[in-house]
Length: 363
Image 1 (cartoon, rainbow, N blue to C red):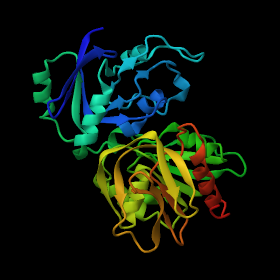
Image 2 (tube, rainbow, N blue to C red):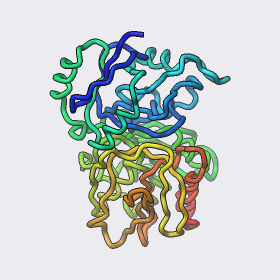
Image 3 (cartoon, helix red, strand yellow):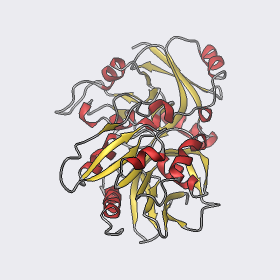
Image 4 (cartoon, one colour):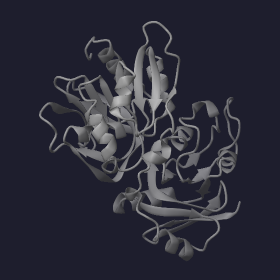
């Protein structure tokens, strides 16, 4: 395999081998601690503009199965692993991880001490980096330091759909009509809603509240997505007009956007929450569930309107994991209810939302 190099903005250099396309890929270096689900992660739009480091030492052992993809393309700019499996062992596998990355034109590196990369990010925070197969480290570092900060780019605009479309047929009797705002949606959100008798129409992130309400939906969902929610003032203004108009669910980025409409702020976490083992407590019931997460920003509850309250908290660092309102049909979660880190603890969020649509109340 050709040589490859990972260079971080602080000057750290890690040598390894190329396992994808040739060239270079730039992005904010982040890490995910999940032991499986690499293909779902690679197709998650919330990783747009980032270099994804997987901490589990062997990635690709069960190969590639296109039916599990969460979007139509690989979303991270590049991939960093300790070892990419050379052989795939699964009945539904169609190719190896390396072949998949090369076919999709994604630059990736293996042979890196991913523990050392992770420790550096945990100690110093996320930073820009580059994976390169065609530059000397000093050239790559000079180029890297001329790039714009990750936080200065509206990544949502790069991943949203360019037109509205129907995910499934709304012709069946009794189906609830859902308008979903795509800030970087994962397919399993639509699947989860469809499984609960919902017909989903997906809209671009710049859709107006007027156009959403003109559809006369039974409920509205704001999806997850990448980047800094402080760059999304237009989305916040449109979402403000939706509060109280229809039952509203915000997931991850959608949670942050809705929180801003209710007076809360947001801030960047030092190295984010990315993995499948984050404990979250529902303060209304006292129930604790293990959640899958992928976000670099969190909600600051200071300034939250008196009509709203924090409904969920992260038991690791006590950050806000959910918001609800006292009188309006609104709920938000910071974690990914559609992801299954093993247990299916959090799919019930969709049942709660479905109950809102039926005016049955939240269970």
